[in-house]
Amino acid sequence: MPFYITTAISYVNGAPHLGHAYEAIATDVIARHMRQRHDEVFFLTGTDEHGEPIADAAHALGITPQELADQHAAQFKAMTAQLNISNDFFIRTTDPEHERCVQEVLQRVHDNGHTYKGVYEGWYCPRCADFKVENEILEGNLCPIHETPLVREQEENWFFRLSSFQQPLEQLFAQRPDFVMPVVRYNEARAFIESGLQDVSLSRARMHWGVTVPWDHGHVFYVWFDALLNYYTALRYARDGEDLTSKFWPATYHVIGKDILKFHTVFWPAMLMAAGIEVPEHVFVHGFLLGSDGRKMSKSLGNVLDPSEVVDRFGTDALRFYLMRDVAFGGDGAVGMSGVTVRYENELANEYGNLASRTLAMLVRYREGTVPAVGTDPVLLAEFAPLPAQVAALLDRAEPSQALELIWQRVRRLNRYVEERAPWQLAREPALADQLDQTLASLHEGVRVVTVLLHPFMPASAERLLGALGADGADGWRYPAAAFAANGSGARVEQQPPLFPKR
Ligand code: ME8
Image (cartoon, rainbow, N blue to C red; front, side):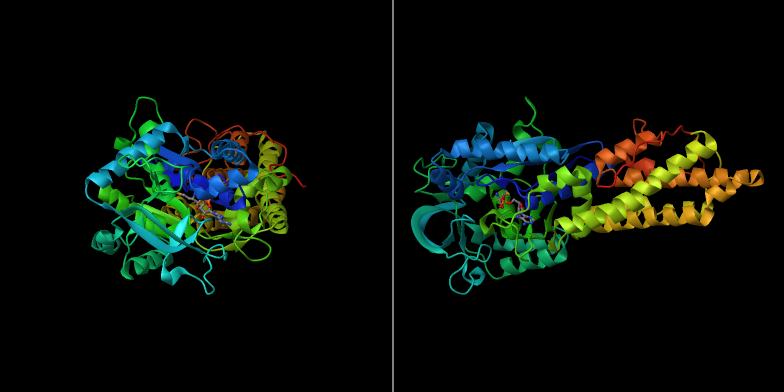
């Protein structure tokens, strides 16, 4: 079953921040987990490069919007590399292929009769590039997201008949209760639809930094329509000479933050219906990382924390682990360097890293580095047997933090197992050699299983450890390998420096 997952595409009016890193990491964890289970996975990320905020930011710096986009897109690409994100393609909405495909799809929307020309007047947030409807506006005419004043705007533009999709959208939500997850966001989107949909601007006349409307060259498309289409257009040109839409469309999961819910769960499916394209299967919505002041971490509020700082101090896997562990997906979470330090020392170094070191050291010391090919402990076998299916079920519901918690309970279980069995005592009694064999084989198996399941969360560390465990064969990292075996493997292990050294 082909599987297609996307992140939102980031605005290039500023440098990447931890919120972007969080979304990229969460999506990567799900993508990597799906690669453990499926042969064909496509993972897309990229940058959203048109629109007023970018034109304005470039103007303020005295450079062209394209120059600004080039600078920041390079930083976003560097961030994906630094975070070990396994995306299959990086789309930029200034790619000429994207622009052509946007024109083609929206021309279809126009030809199908879903557009008209009219005058729009309303309260507009330049930072969101969005007209706000009455029930979204904060007291004092403020943007609900940026808490900055909205501007009264009037202009002639093309409209998309969103109102005529009222019924189809209600039907979509009624038929597919898992279209939006978690359920609190599903309810929010559904309530927005049920409150009555108004038509929305499809084009801007005063703006030039965008994709030209093919049937009216004085207009560019409103940036959101251009941006949303990236999920579809990328498949058309990501691979030379191939149209991947036949394999990967409709998208399985769009991963987004809660501030852009309306666009992805209302505008986007309506636009696809208007173009005669299938709607995506699920939208996964995460919360916000909050800065030390308890507010959304964002460029415009100036309370951002640089992900590189964490990576420089603790490494990429520690950042990935920390964010997935500390912030329950779907909810908001305050994050900071002290939290990273505590998780790193207590959980990565002392619990997991130490478990790995002890297991390898004892195998080397007591069995010359060979895993005894004997039956594993039936008690551990029973405890570990349901784990892979439980983890898969949680990730299918976009609950990476709960999945990580279940895996971590087994890490702790294995540490208790070491204490219970006290292999150093068994080693003193030649008569207990069988028990020592079973203990070491079971520990090796347990560490191997948790490491396979941790692979999507901390790929580099997991690969290193699987190598040291002698379990890094071609499919050693895949989902079937997460089954706890009834028998020790006879594998050769080797000791290695600590996975998470003291900092
Ligand atoms: O919204 N915590 O771009 P963007 C968690 N270009 N997630 C955060 C966050 C935070 N503090 N700040 C931002 C856009 N995000 C549009 C998307 S998609 C067709 C177009 C998330 O750069 C945010 O919720 O403002 C969004 O999902 C992503 O980062 C990009 O945000």
